[in-house]
Amino acid sequence: MSQQKIAVIGCGMWGRNIVRNFYNLNVLDTVCDIDEENLKKVLEQYPGTKVTRDFNKILHNKEITAVAVVTPSHTHYKLVKAMLEAGKNVYVEKPISTVAQEARDLSELAHAKGLVLMVGHLLLYHPAVNRLKMLVEEGALGEIVYAQSDRLNVNYHKNDRSVMWDLAPHDVSMISYVTGKTPIRVISAIGCSSDRNEIMDITHIGIQFEDGVIGHISDSWITPRKHVTLLVRGTKATAILDDTVPENKLVVYDNFEQNATKNITTPDVLEIEPLKLECQHFISCCETGKKARSDGDNGFMVTQILEEAEKIMLGERVKKLDEVNFALSRMKK
Image (cartoon, rainbow, N blue to C red; front, side, top):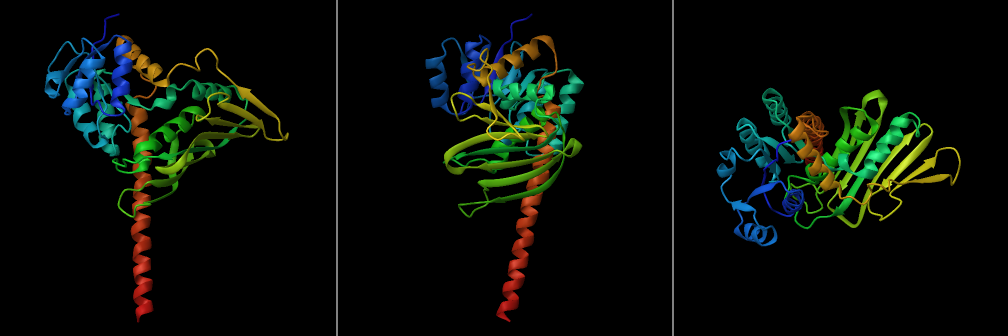
């Protein structure tokens, strides 16, 4: 197998974690960022790593075999497309795009060129999530009927398009992966801004998956006490994965016997950082050419659902506002 040379574009808060993992896996070649201070820290912490502010130096460097794009979501399409057209395998942080057609185009381009396109749906590589998926496949919960993912925390920077685009890609991809069901349509979607501006920091989405499975997703940037749980309800048992606790993250409850619970552990891999597993998966896909678990098609599926949800949120907001204005005008008369 050939030694991969990977470049990382974007070394902000999350990009630093990507840089650290690829460096520790001995494949990091170059880091690109527009912030000189970020590049200075890279040089100090990761000896031998090259840095640049010009992504064209990565684009035209034939020795670089793969690129990780860890930049704001509105820049993903342009950067990923350029790297794929240059013949490089690409890892892109979630969401792959906030426009479904762009996500489809990137996935089709990767397929046409025979390249790896992997989206950073991190939880598909989480040991406890994979243990839960195994329980579902074994039939331990019975037939799956419902899933609920709550991802609530505080974000003081609120610099993305909305909390939905920041966090819900994890929830949609994870529910689909664990249950083995593809999302079909958005049933309901509401969002609001606690700051009373255009950036929604609380969102709730209802999704119909295959075979009648219903999923409910709540995301928040304003919750002081972190709450990260996935509930999967089957006809026999209900599993709850709580990612905020240090141990016994996964518990299964019998649906018919009170206080009958079972802690599910995965001692062999539970202590491994999920991001390390994700980075290893990307390297393996680059070396073997195999399809990534969270490939471009997976990214398109998620973007398509969230695009639909956002349209419902914004449409409902406009509709309700029109109704209020109409009511007020009637009252003034």
